[in-house]
Length: 155
Image (cartoon, rainbow, N blue to C red; front, side):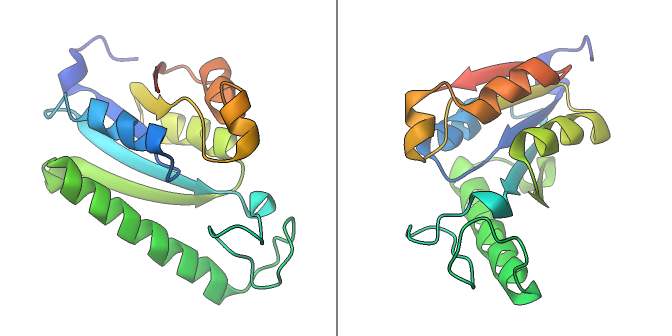
């Protein structure tokens, strides 16, 4: 991990569409000289087909054999969300990069920390689903336990 000032660090902000993750990005804007990476991880096994959120084309959660069109549609939706968040944040677009990964959110966040030499993770305390509202957030807790980077949790 870098011993430099936080303003000079590489910050990862996992974005899941929850208000807490937007607050995490707001907090990250306090360090305008930092390089910021937004990461959204889509877990195909954790998609609720009856929600108004991301939908499986086969109508059943836990079915990861979605079509390429489905994956592309999800990527397009997330890319648009990232663009809007960067625009709203007022950050210099040249200091912000975005990533979209598929798989286990905790594993992908930890892998991103390692692969992109992330110094600091700033993340929301929980996602939007009902169980996440009860707990600290299994993704947040897993990230804290498994990563070598400093983790700041924002409510």
